[in-house]
Image (cartoon, rainbow, N blue to C red):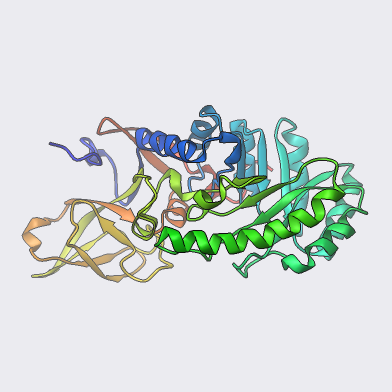
Length: 367
């Protein structure tokens, strides 16, 4: 009996390669919608998949709001027909002009971005006035990640300044609590409550200054289940759509399934207990320590050394892995792994057919 991941025509695919399984992607989309209850509470991040086809699958499922990190991802979403796109980044330099270009080129998509500093707000306002547009904004709050965002205690002051700028329009707050990775859901809930409380305090202070209701965008895949049912809150999972080894073992309470894999082949036998495969730094995300990938059909294989185009594995019996043998791997971190490939092979009913371009791995599509 074939395992779910095995491909009958794998001999037609050179390795290393990225495989995607649409039926399993659909299941992950169904699961995230079921967890949210109300699809309007979802704002998935597309940094994981970077593929037009995957975004269209989510749009067809009824998801209308998305989050992204690059102008290319924002344009990919607009091309796919996404109604609402948040660039979860504070635009500086040419990035702002490209964002305004997107607004003009794709009027059917509502674009917004982040701001966390008064100087940047002044820059955004001045450039928006020159271009004759009004830019919708989310105030980016530092809720513990210590990466971007204004301190919640200073946020109301920034809001007051922006309210005097006629070409900027505040529509909500944004807080990313990517520092929360507790395996225990109770601890994860506790820590996400702390992050949300900081954002909610700002929300309660500034909401009376606005005629329209504001929204809070909170969390990634680990914490979106904790935030998704809060009032005025949208959750932004990203990894859920493909899933990976890291989150599967860090977050065992979440129900998502593997929907993207990398394949590799044995290219050399080193000695009685070591083989070498063609899965180097350039083929699987390398920011984590070894192991960076786990093999579904070689669970005992232990990565011991890696370079740009090679990965050495320690195995019990080299005879089980003849040269040319195909290994199916689950990356520890799927998001940056996807960005290493220009296309993914689509597997349906154990057969690879069409390919999907990883279009947003590029920094520019058209704009």
